[in-house]
Length: 152
Image 1 (cartoon, rainbow, N blue to C red):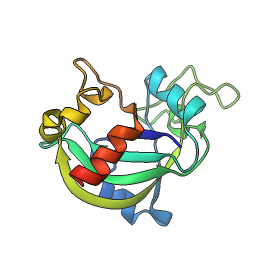
Image 2: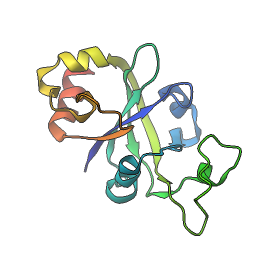
Image 3: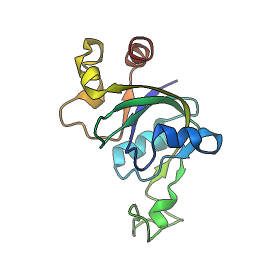
């Protein structure tokens, strides 16, 4: 089992939106970074743990727990000319962007970014590294355990 931190802007999809979705599951659309795409395409497995992180909002931080709920498949937004995530180079025969479904498990108290930065046990966490802007980052088992046991 692996662990991930997945960022979402709450005005696109929040932990509340995910919990209210059918099966508490949402497709993780719109990822347009190759490294983040490769994590979904090549490494994620059903059942992997997810820290559901709200970003680009007044108080960014971990807002809930989730799990990977599907194997990767083509992100349909890449084919939709009306979508802000449209990619004219992508075709159904040769998709460029993949996604996984994420199942929300529970909303937690918000763990603000500042609290994460203040925790010595998390100093190596990828999301906290200077210049880190990836929307999906791996989380170590130790980091996961610390967040779940100490912070939530």
